[in-house]
Image 1: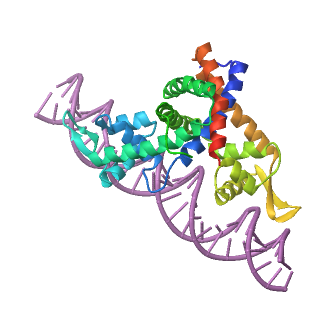
Image 2: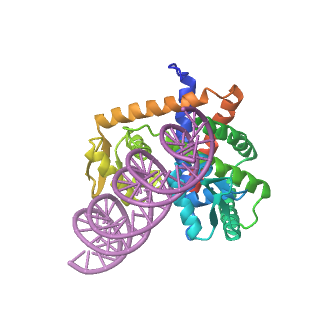
Image 3: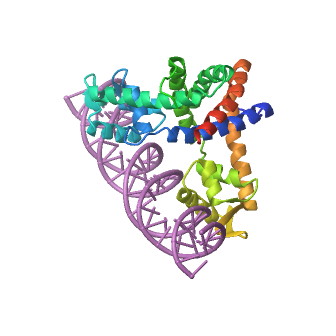
Length: 147
Length: 147
DNA sequence: CCTAATAGTTAGGGTACCTAACAGTCAAGC
DNA sequence: GCTTGACTGTTAGGTACCCTAACTATTAGG
């Protein structure tokens, strides 16, 4: 917005970007084979709490609508979600999870969470505290970036 | 290593995975157009402190050797790195940054750091503290995952 | 030497994004 | 009521970045 960056913030920004980069690789390697991909799991988790429209899914995932459509069609072909026109607005499409989808999310999340939990076991109590405290901050930064 | 996950860690693991997912999208969207891509910048930053072999680059980036070769060739074509056989081992290839590469890293980092710094400006002092404290923990988790 | 291990490259393939162009539906104003 | 413009998705075509498998070249051990 303005043009005068605080030098201290710039240093933190650099570290933060480095952590993000590491996170990208970590996230990628968290993908067990023969399972849902990370992108599919993210989408499926999102609709598991209730049906959503394609546009909302795209917005929440931070991707464009055509990319969301593509993923949704794949999941539909796999029998994990259903697509039907929104009764209130025939332009829109409601995406809902199937019971097979629920099962898939369940087991995929469980497996990945176990993988991560195992990594967290090596942390000290203080480190766990520090990590837990920072996660909401990261979410906040992300949502302010959505604009 | 064992089979009894601490339920508290599992909860944190879930939140952490979600933060990672957000981080992935954030990192990607940090890519200004007409600039280096995130992957290219990561690689280029890595060799900017001194020449490295292809295999080392791949290992540090957490990708396979052919993927590294591909990126390196692109960067070479763009005049940002040079490739030459390692004098001590003709099988190996030394990758070094050029002055144009150094300039590109410099400006790309500066631009991205400024973007992130701007996001950080919206945080409270406490949130900044919390974020700063967690970054080393994230790095630690990542390096323990490399194994 | 000859064989096994090591370092990269090439070839072929897949996922997940993107923009641009399109079709269908809704809503507002004349 | 019909047209116009805004909105919701889908289709088409393209790109970035990663992978495995197969190959070449070099090194090192027996």
